Length: 239
Image (cartoon, rainbow, N blue to C red):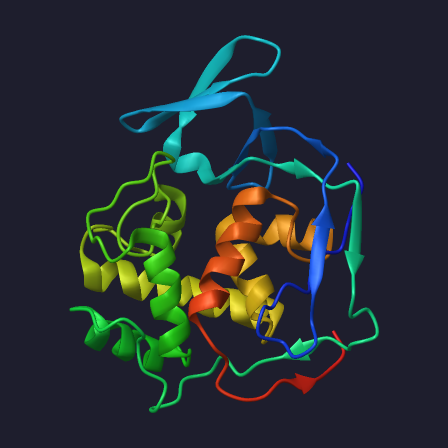
């Protein structure tokens, strides 16, 4: 598959407008393992703590769910990309904690979000928008992929972050915000890349040089950036 840079999809960036010309579309499940390996599957099924991977050519096998870093749905093949603002430099946005930047939705978890955002020096509004997209503030949410809790941590990620009780809001949010902090440190103040990595994995963002062309990931990033607004006007900076 061709590597296509899809970094600029910030709906509130002044003058930015982009659309994707899609000609060929295929559906696949991308199983990403802890060691970075990716397997394209026709489908999958979770059985307790095991994941059954169905292969495109037939057959299946099971693996320990704790070995799976994430599962990404619906890869799309992009034949062409046209970006109307190609002369516009990349912009960075302030993702650090500020007392005036509060959680967005007025939930019972606002105090917890505020506390953990401050601990990790992250914008509390940004964290709250991600949680809404991940679990809609349901602390016992379990996705069909096996992700759990408010910030939808996969078992492998939860174990790495020492989250032993993924359905405990305090433990889950602390671990999820810690992971979000790691992504900001890795990708810098580029919210689209940070969100794409949270959804599709760091490896996918680095492989494609930007937001990977997965339908799920593109929709995820756009949904969160539709709720969240940056604290400051963008400051042009090279990447």
